[in-house]
Length: 326
Image 1 (spheres, rainbow, N blue to C red):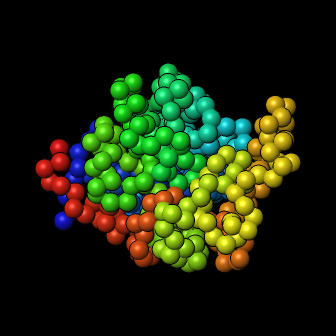
Image 2 (image 1 turned 120 degrees about the vertical axis):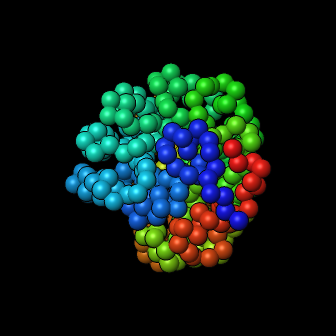
């Protein structure tokens, strides 16, 4: 049975029925997925980088503003590897989402400017030290990226990270990583999180724009098939351990590694590695070839078939105990 609602500070803040964010996924998240998420009582976000040009970004923002039946968000990469950040922020200020999730850098600019147009800013954090920096800048919430998260995961388990953040800061904490059913959702809320961010279970959905092969891989592979690679962005990132990934390995080669440690060149090497890696991910997402690099997290273990977003949400909430509902 699915509860009619689960109330937390996150549901109150965003006006949603359930404390779940469909996580922003590079090349995967799109307008159709986010709109279906809203209809199902949760909310979703899309990486700004999923739109290649400012014109496409503005068109996507306007579509969501006009047609989405609930709150929606945008993810921003806020470090120097994102050369599109300035026009992305300008577009968001002109067509504001309900919230922004920031990753991989300082959120100062979007926090300061976004607050003027009512944008809530949630920041990806992997430890107390970084969380303190974004809280001091005025973040509205923390996305606690734990060791079970897909993409750029953290090092700490949710059992360690959530309590540390909850006991240290007064801002809401949203757990990211490892949730695919009601028990996982309850575990995170019981530790003090106000909600969860769920990504990988939504890859194999009807509304997802990626290839059938990518979706089927999420069905066929499981949590034990997820490995970390530094070849995509220079930072550890989770991918499905396909035969191609096994062939090329998961570590940077000796030259990439040496250059990445050079203080003067590190930033530029990171940018080049990121660009090269994103091209590989893009090719894998939309075409079926032997050379595939498919990003996903351990929660693909909950993916048993390709189905609509609505059904993934229902499966996530199925059996949530009534006595635990506020």
